[in-house]
Length: 525
Image (cartoon, rainbow, N blue to C red; front, side, top):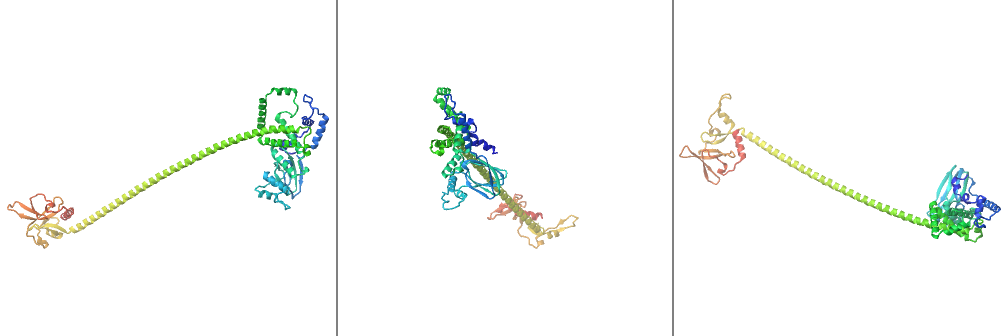
């Protein structure tokens, strides 16, 4: 049994008359009428017509195909552009498909009739080479035992059988590819395909399909003469109401059927108009008995034209809406892109500012660190200088201490002159034991092999720097008074009496702490 889908859409199953009622209804459009709409067709005529219809019925919906291994079926299109169901009961089949575009069909027709430019003068030319050289594609499909393949209308295909195979299949015409099926039918006419290789009674089947579809559109059997009651009702309806009713019918059809189905019936209506006006016997013989083909074609064409116009309007509206939506979407994307771009710029700017802040902070930290290093270096150098200075002072002090350990100052008892005296001389002048009281004998310059000075001198210590200076002493008439004359660098002489304070500047000298330190060390030592 053929697949359920094929049975549900097959025109032969749906539209070819099967009963006497169908035969009478098919001839009622031209049969006589008695004024009440009753037909004058007799039952015998209906039975004869039914027998003729049954004999003319296309029987292509089911067949059995046995193929030997290694056989090849060259590229072809199934008759009338019919679709094919193909169930592989046993074996394997390899199909090669070519899409039925306008260019590919033109190449195929030229190749099949040996009229293609590259086929002339050649015995064999492989069709896929022509298709691929023109930019087309060839598809390979392999089916195995138990699988079923559906071949769409109009597809060019070839079959290779690698092993012995048994196939059950069938062809069927349907309304979902009417445009392609009519295109293949016209192509067969142009290629002058023999009658035995065409779909049987193809035009007659299309007339029945058009009649039934027209009946579905208008809601009753077309072209039945109206009754007197229908005439009275029609006379009461105004033109505007008829137009509105017609428009509602068109809208109902457009909502009930998809656009490609309506365009397929529109292509069928145009083809039926050409068939109905043709006087060719081959076309006239395909007219169904008793059917007003001109009225069917004209009325179907009128309805389909309105449907196509409505579809075009809806398509324009749809395209306009899609364009508006696309424009809105594009603008939205542009805004989103601009917003994202601005956000990226803002983030980059913030990042740059952050980097600048970090760089400034890093430089400031480096400056502070350098300043700290410089301060530490300066402090280290200062400490080193202070330590060096302290070391020098300590070394100098040690030198002085080592120097004055052996030298002392002593005043001559005869001339009062202060002399540097070795420490051993001082120790020698001391009399007594270590445990008893120690007394010192007088010290004279001769103890250190020096001569006493003739002029009496006096040593005076500066009250500021504590430096000792040698001054001449002059005895006055008053023996109780003694003047000490301080002679400066400029030759002037000043007198100092008694315990008057003495300063280095009175003799034109500057106070010197070093001399004080040396003298202090010397005196203390």
